[in-house]
Image 1 (cartoon, protein in one colour):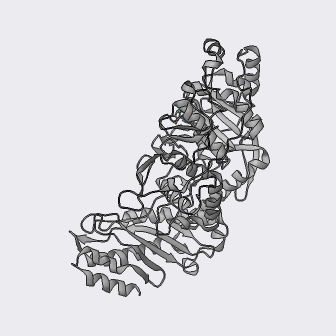
Image 2: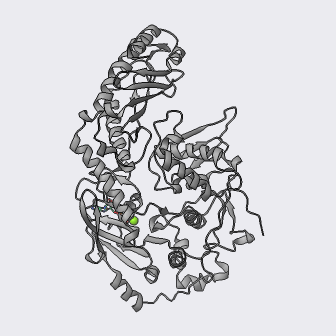
Length: 572
Ligand code: ADP
Ligand code: MG
């Protein structure tokens, strides 16, 4: 069937009941591309219909260099998705009741992620996925409107976005090169003994707490202190200079409002690549960097938090700790142990979002509350063990406790948004004013044991429905009867990532969790498959609204699922 067949069918449906649209499911050859109606909505007010467009590589005409590697394909797909999303929004208009006439593609944020809205094949084929509100008057089909929308507007939209000839070639090339450079910087970290890098000239602050674009006015661009400056090379932009944070323990300190948290947030975001002009294009951190924070109220299932917390009142076990309502300190401890279990090599911690009693316990408190009455071994006594026994580095923002000066390898001071190397001064201060603390982590830091996943825990049924999976605003996944609150997982940024995580839980639950494999083993299998086949593994029903996520994001969701997903460790 071709475009003319679709036109004829749509006109024929004029005035019929809405469900008759379902007969149109299928593929239509438009000459230059192929349109597929994957899923057709039940009525004009329901979730919109899912459409796909496939443009063959020779028709799309992008130069081979723009899709010659996985990173480049992701960047190209992202670029096309941004344009399509923008133009689709512009050419959407009400063509009747409900969502009639609305064309929508998931729009990426400041990060460039692999996503299912536009996927680029190894041969340069483009697969676009988006939604359309099929037009109706009341609940009757508006066939003429549908024809104009699907046959005319859509063709123009595809022509304006999916062909090389309609692109700004220079802008597109810069987009691809920027992403490739950022990946290259990240890939070089380990060989240079670094965990993060912030290029000189970077713009770190954001427009506002709810706007991720760069701050427009009065920005102080980042400049590395000379002593921390390193040189890395990129395939496109050549040599880049900036601050290298080495493995070990790094403190970021300084006065309030001087830019500490802003620097840390840029590092958190450094696990992602950014679009040109974002300001953080050359700010990178290890891909396994995990933001750690307190998250009171979260649930915890079977996590061994004993390195940080033991001997709770009432003799509660902390080697396999369960709670529906964690405290600030127990949640922060669980977040760290879970991060280690998922393979974190860098922890990012801000005092602003930490539990004080988890971070510090000073000399006077050690005296007033004896160790045998304090379940918590503070992070300050564990941070070096993490680094020396488990090769896990930490970057910690702390302006409020000098006890950390004793455990830091490097101290970066922020003053008026400018970074200074305060390491030598900090050493000198630490020597002059001893903390007098007693070290409280005499027993070493045992690596967390793996936890086994049960298939039954991944049950997403609700009532008579076999699968109910949704994403709500503010970082909540609805998974069957459960709500998974991921709002405190600071590095999960985009709703499309949440949707993909939810799909991945379904998939992993069905295919990999077997009551024997550990969470880490399940994630190995899942991510092997995702690396091999891309996000289409999770988008089998034509979903165009999924974006890539990390192991830590998947683990975060599983760890917060209030269902019996973790097999109870045998006691004793
Ligand atoms: P701190 O954590 O040290 O208290 P923040 O990082 O929260 O400080 O920064 C305080 C304010 O300064 C924020 O509104 C932030 O946007 C702004 N800011 C941070 N860095 C810069 C910069 N380099 N240039 C201009 N403004 C900045
Ligand atoms: Mg702060």
